[in-house]
Length: 356
Image (cartoon, rainbow, N blue to C red; front, side, top):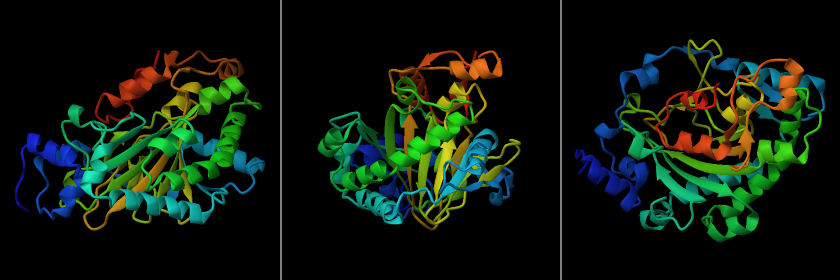
């Protein structure tokens, strides 16, 4: 069995119908990578230039009102689009409980996880999947993930997996002050000093949290954990474990920088929605995840998004302040995300959907 390389139909049955996911493949201790996961040479990180990982900003946000914090956050959002935050107010024990809950979910038996696969799930607000969009990909990604759309606590308690829902809801509750403070700072950098109710819905009207699992891979150099892409969020709050493997495109676009795990820190990255709303002042940056040949890895991104029914485009205040023309057209946010989720990861191609 270890040397079997199933055909794509058999592989899909194994991954999805049997509920095994790529975790099940890894646990078979296969020595060869199934051909469906072999990425083109152009997508393998080993063929690309890397730069010093110490370049990623680390920002102490213990005082959000400090002018130096505002300057550092807005500067990082403009140049890198990625930065670490420390002293962010989310207790360490809450972060650890989320990581443990993620491990517990993926440790469930396949027959238990199977009911959450998007093909079987009773709600599109709870979707277990493998790779990214398998039906649209020429080469699969070495990852399983559970995606949970947040409406309110009552719905989450009713439909999210019991093994992890309480920990995730507690984490999201603890992130509320962080989300509001970060949004206020980012808007200050755009000379918007008060966020009205309409703009709260536009900037942070919905949330989604993903649990990502990257199992040990037999030939990690031949595949990817996640392909090149930028998030479609306003911004993303990422909780990493201590394994590492996240790379971001450097500002000069000539290399990739590793985002090393920092105990207790959270990683913030700007999404396409905020790049559009800031008319390009803030940058959503391409990032990717490598596969690992010796250790399982987990990560938990919390996506802070516009409400799906909102129309996104450059904010009027930004255009008035800069006296620039709009670089992006107005698009329904649900249309923008639908375009993103219908295709394989392909760098920042989704942003072209909104460009004028």
